[in-house]
Length: 385
Ligand code: NAD
Image 1 (cartoon, helix red, strand yellow):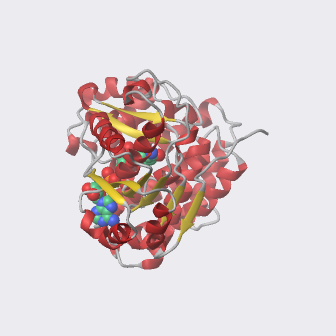
Image 2: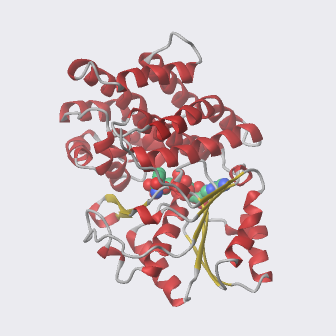
């Protein structure tokens, strides 16, 4: 057995820990670049102490999922401001822009030099500037992953800039920051974390460390996503979901993902559907297709027993298996009111193009078995309504 494992330089977790951010920023320099979401006033109590410590701050808002143009603009502003340290407080969209800015501050040239698929894909040469990633959703786990996802609207795709060096130096995970998420956002982001835990657990690149993270994260998401959706002030449920998200990011960064995320790149580029909705809507059907394909073409695969284990973890029933896991997730999506992908403009005519793009997506490489075009299209047909 051989594996590598890398994560953020330091992870600070717990209710209230975000209050440490100003001091940590101050320890890195006098010029900070702040990246914030659509309602930055929510985090005033974290930002005001920066000025009190004499730190010059430039800031930028990232209100939704970022494009390459938005990220390039952020890089230009941050370079002009002679930034020494990046503080990103927000959802995965904000954290990803923060990671890009930190990387581009110490690596010359344009963003397109480093982008996968649509750019030159050059490797980063230098360690990024110090970056503090403070998630406010739960989530993407982007505070501990080494890629940043950016949309390319004119090509209708989402692509990554990726480097092992891009994991933020600090991941500051404070569940209190997630209490303000409305139910719909709690649902979609929580399903992203659940999907990441499941895909990393059955991935053909899983290792004992990522397994441990998934076995710890899955029961937390299983018992608490619905509770957080129904009562956003349930501190225990919010804490569980923040941990599930963190563990999902640590696991996916080291074990890769699977077909759900293979689809999420093209579908996120072609439709306005939020990333978490795409993940949740596809998850049960991808699981079902994977189990069937493994039973038919690779019955000895160790991933099959993983699917059964997921059934036991999520249902809490000792005799449950993969079928019960799929049913449990379908029920959860119904309770969370997840819409079909047609709502976001997907039509049957798009299926061949989506399947072709998904087949070539980098996330597909972690799927426990290769799915053929018929299987991929059948998944889309189930998730559209
Ligand atoms: P998001 O960051 O796009 O935020 C969605 C909305 O929620 C925004 O309007 C934001 O302002 C709002 N919001 C954020 N926190 C809030 C809070 N506490 N209360 C109320 N509103 C809040 O959503 P996300 O799901 O966290 O991130 C999605 C993005 O992350 C996608 O672009 C996806 O591709 C990317 N992603 C990246 C990775 C990675 O490893 N880099 C992993 C998964 C997803």
